[in-house]
Image 1 (tube, rainbow, N blue to C red):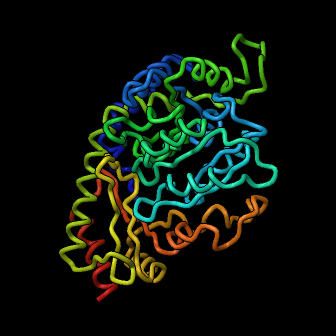
Image 2: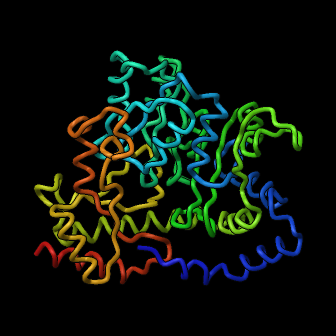
Length: 378
């Protein structure tokens, strides 16, 4: 699915020099590299404030805590996402409320959210304080409609942009589309660290100041704790690596789009494409208002599990994001959902398959993937 060594071969000297500089300085926690990276990342996202933290999961919690979303509040989000989307809401002390996804983009559906907003709240649920759309696979959710809904119903918008660094919606870059946003720099991401790291962004100075306090045990002044915060600082070594990689992420995202277009072209030329899995492969849909960064290239595939086994036997890596929707996870039974509650998400979990895509992927390797899939269906 991903070969880290290819990227490292091209940036080795810059990364090692950056790491060496941190080691020489002996500034390992919130050193100058962190501040420089935050400033550069904020500029890349078109926002005034970016706050580095320990992980994308922490960034989600930090975004909600900075907006003072917590006990007594309800947050609407998607059942078709990574576990952290819902677990971060619970960690903030709020109640998750789920709505189904859009069939084509896999993102949270604003129409489904509107239905939830217009229905009576479940017993025990407080006011809807926020909606958390996920920019899944690197494509922004339908932010215009969410903004309109937010203005009508008085909730905040928290972007789960973990997979979408550099993506945009109607020319506005992810991270600046809501009241706050969260990014992950997990090693597989388009902009990736050499371990766990994350970032929250906001346009609001008060939220920025509060997030910086909360990520350091609630301290504004050393050893004086205004609130019970968290230890979620971005390591200086990770910031140094991210500073190097940030200079290349736009070019990497462009290459991902080129590879996605090649996949589309080759699958169509092979006669493998249909409008539903009853007819063939369903290719990724890109909304014309979005600039997709293809963190993942995800098809819907007939006989998905058999195909995946076949590709594995031919040494082709794939992944399923995600095989079990959040509302059916054992640890989230307390939310009270059951199978059949979110049919679009459930169907997606049975059909989606992510194929290899990263900037260093060679076109002959892409051809090998397409040819193997053609052989499977022939």
